[in-house]
Image 1 (cartoon, rainbow over the protein chains, first blue to last red):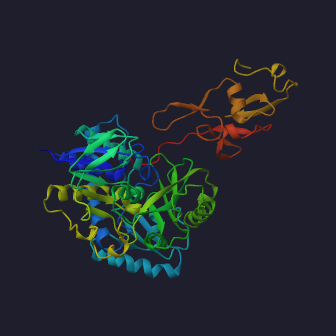
Image 2: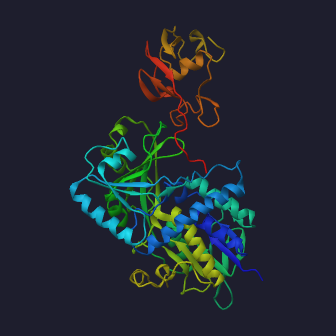
Image 3: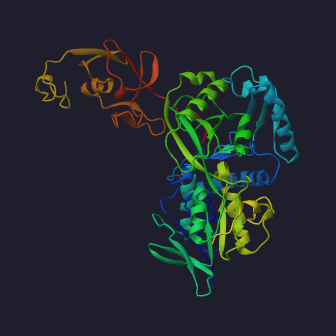
Length: 394
Length: 108
């Protein structure tokens, strides 16, 4: 009998998992209380980065994901055809600069650690940095170039993965929230209850991004995923004057921080249509989506420090999204030992687009019961760093 | 004057006589009604599309008319990316239509 899987969440992680599982022969249904790419996946920058991750498990996963994206972008193109909008896969490379003398040494140390983990992190001189980015402000103290960094248009990428999944037989039920677990007489999880009726499944996979804690609670378990808000400014279109993903070295500190107060750092890049995306901020404000003028002011001011010409750019709009934050800064990928049949693929914070494909591959292999390409233990719910954050749900 | 433009004297909201305002659009003198936006002057002159998209070369002009869609961007007196629907026409404004080629290689 074909194993049935219900995936909760039609963002990029859910879409990637659906596609991988269906290709492996699973019978997959994706449900979402909203629409495909209706949450974080359409409110982010589409990063596929190795540059912002220090040596460790997340970096290893990101390195694997980078190779998967290259292949998958081509597969999607071939499968969906020219009439489907391009996912705008762009291996543009990243350029990380230190704008202060104090920032130079930590950046170089960080890059050295990445190099020993196999990342192509090239410490370059200021002149070379300015040849890569001629409009970069003078006064850069250090620069590291990461040719492996890439980007996709995240909404289209999610839709493309889901369209690909549908062609393999995946059903997608939009506007269908989870109401609760479907339990058998013995109390075992055998699916989920929705307004459209019960959905029976051998495996229920939570891929609800920042809303995963809420979904997990409905199913009866605690999951320490919290929303962390990030804001992005969008300029009107212009000719390309920024050629890589360029960011200030303090971005890494902001992402890695557990501080709930507003943190901003400069992340600037062009998109395929000619707009410039200016990020980024991190702030723990729950699911409060109100406009954060203080955050926008800070990221605009910092962007001008990197690229002075942006002072005259017209800002067309801003958007914000909730990143699924984990207290130990690692996603949860795998089964939930507390409730057999329940699985998680969530908690990727700002790296979900990049890590989605590697996450999906790991989930697929765990569900098939075959060896995973990478060790899955660091992403298990039972890992030591997460234990203090898990609590019993009555 | 075109059919889309209500003659000033018959405007029930503001039945007062109208004063003209003249701007240039790509160098062509174009006269509208004082108080109109640049978009209003351009539309009133009979031009619907005044820019073309980069990818499909499709015509674009005023879409939302309320400052949200950024489809009506024009250069005004040397400043680019001005929303024509949000800028009131001033006598002598030099409006230049904008075109941006697609900037990069993101074609996968």
